[in-house]
Structure formats: structure tokens, C-alpha cells
Length: 434
Ligand SMILES: NC(=O)c1ccc[n+]([C@@H]2O[C@H](COP(=O)([O-])OP(=O)(O)OC[C@H]3O[C@@H](n4cnc5c(N)ncnc54)[C@H](O)[C@@H]3O)[C@@H](O)[C@H]2O)c1
Image 1: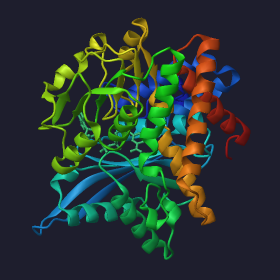
Image 2: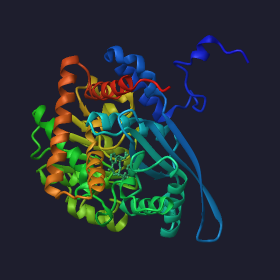
Image 3: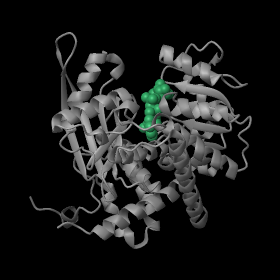
Image 4: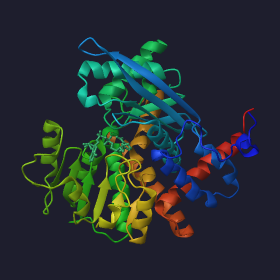
């Protein structure tokens, strides 16, 4: 077949494995890259690098179910960019995981790691499974088989997974063990977010929420929003949402609404967050919490509030609900919660959005500390970890704030400018092989 010259150069073509009509979250990332390109100067010659993941591995994950049948699940590991160091990014277990989603999440990890200047590239993994429908044994078998399948591309100096939605330190322990069994040595540095007794880091469990709180409080101070009594609404009450809510409440804010996958609770005077955390732990959801009013799922977006923290899944703030949001400040705990159209609406309405790629970087920052501690087999105190975390998060926000002011762009575009410059400068210095 004769190729059209443009196709042969393929400089702007989408990879054939993507459906241009249904780009999903990857399409959002591509738009974000287009927005930053005019600011990249000579480095823009490398920008197409960002529009193609370096490596994608799709695996079949077959396991024996408790009833004796065999089930197959789709698994992915995407290494978006490794110009600045090994791949780094979480593993998600969710029934709606798609390749487009994992690609976008991997790309956002490249941006995030560069934004906080930790020496990692970006990667992400996922298994298309609803873990709530698995027994503990089935979950362990899915985790171990998936880890074994992606074992050919992960490793302490190659690509280091971590927890994400529906994965936790229990899952990380199984991943570490499986990888270690396969390579014949205990390799603690292959994953982060491990239990403390297996080379995990103090402060890792809370790190993402602590980072969300740190940059959120700093952004609030910069726009003259007093945290004392400020009304906060939180979507998602897992690791990120739960810790963020607790830290804002401890700082004197009123967490007035919390929404999770199964319910939405509201209390104008402020929810009792420790009690709500205990309820969610016991029942698996905030629904049914007695000391609050239950409100309709969609009513969450109309709740009067000063600060909104999306901390669930991507594409939650859309052109449809952005006009209804009353908050002055949105701190993105989740990855990719705001669509580009919603971003524009919020900007026009004067709502400040602290983007995911800096706001939720606390997790990977302490993951970096964990990886360093595992390599040196020397462990730091929690106080030391939290101090270093807060310093990095404040420094990163300050840097992007400055770029946003200098160039008159949103914090998101400013973060992409800082991060893409770092990634593409590394690409430029390394040059192309061969
Ligand atoms: N855990 C980390 O260290 C980390 C780091 C950076 C970013 N993130 C991102 O933060 C987000 C949350 O991650 P997590 O680790 O807290 O996950 P988690 O599994 O601990 O919690 C997810 C929460 O979201 C809720 N949720 C799910 N679907 C929902 C829906 N349709 N509507 C409302 N709520 C819904 C769940 O009920 C749960 O409360 C994800 O986007 C993840 O990628 C996590």
C-alpha cells in the first residue's frame, strides 16, 4: 500500500490503537499538551514525544475463582515517559479501567513527577475488575498474576508501581512478594505504598491528602480565603478524600458535604469527620451516616461551599455541573477530575483550580522518599518525612504560581509549562537513540 507522505511522517497522527471518536481521558491529556505547546519555545520540537506513550503492555490475567471456574481480566501497564528516570505510578483495580484511561493517568504521572521534580518518569497500571466482587483469595490471585505478567517491564530501577483506586498496602505487599519470588531476591524497592514492616515509609498513607491540604491551604492564603470556618465539600472519601477532609477539619474548616460512590451526606454546621471515617470504615460508604442529612447524588454540585475537593475519579467536573459550583477554590485530589471545557467555565467564573498534577503530588513525593529509604535501607522519622513533603509541595506551588502570574495562564497550564520543560529538556539532552 502506498502511504500518503503525511502518514509516512505521521507526526500528528493518532496511534492506530486509538479510536479518534472515543479518545476518553487520553483526549483530555492531548488537549492539555496542545495548550502548553506555544509556551515551550525550541523544546516544542520534542512535544510529539508526549503524545505517544513510550511503552504499553496489555496482559491477560486469568485466575481460578473460588467456585472452580476460570475468569479472565484485562490488565495494563503503560510507561508514558522515562526521559527523567524510571516509570512511576499507581495500579488501579476498577471495572471501568480502559487503555485510554491508563494512558492518560500514566501521562499525568510524567507531568506530576516533573512538576515536583522527583527523578521519575510517568507510568500507570490497571486491571479491569470490580474488586468488591472478589473474595480475598481471588483478589490475591488477580494481584499476583497481574504482577507476574507485568514483571517483564517493572523493577526498582525500571518502573515502580504504587497504590491507586481500590489498591492498598495489602495489595502492594502481594506485588512485592510476587516480583521478589520471580527474581529470586527480596526487592522492596519494586513498589511503594507498602506496609511499614515491609520497607514502607512512615507518612506514605497520609501523604496525598497531606499534600492536598498543604497546597490547598497555601492557595487559600494567597487568595485571602480564611480556612477557619471555610466550608469544604469533598467528593470521594477513600485515601485521598478521607485524609484531606480530616486535615481541613483539624485546621478549623467546616467539611459540609461528602459524596462517595454510594451516597452523599450534608451538614451545614460541619460533619464530624472522625465519626464519618469510622462509619465509612465499618459500612464501606458514607451513606447511612446518622449525624447528617442524606442528599441526592447530583445535589452535591449545588452545595454552598468555599472549597471543593474532587477526590474520586476523573471527568467529574464537566460543562454540565461547572456552572453550578459555588466554591472559590477547587483543589484536585483526584487525577483528571475536570474536563477542559469545565476548566474554561471555571476560569471565566473566577474559580481558582489547583490542578491534580501539583495538588495530589504528595503521594508520589513520599513514594520517592520510600524508594530512596529502601535503596539505602535507612529509614527516616515521620516528622522528617512530613517536613520534607511540605517543603516540596509549597516550593512546587510557589514555582507554578509564579509562572501563572508571569505568563497570565491558569495554574494547570503553568504546571504543564514547568513540567514539560523539564521532561523535554531531558529528552533534548539525551538525544535520540540510535
Ligand atoms: N492514593 C493515592 O496516593 C493517590 C495519589 C494521587 C492521586 N490519587 C487519585 O485520587 C483519586 C482517589 O484515589 P484514592 O486512592 O483515594 O482511592 P480510594 O479507592 O481510596 O477512594 C476512592 C473514593 O472515591 C469514591 N467514588 C468512587 N466512584 C465514585 C463516584 N462515581 N462518585 C463519587 N465518589 C466515588 C469511592 O467511594 C471512594 O470513597 C483517584 O483519582 C486517584 O487516581 C490517589
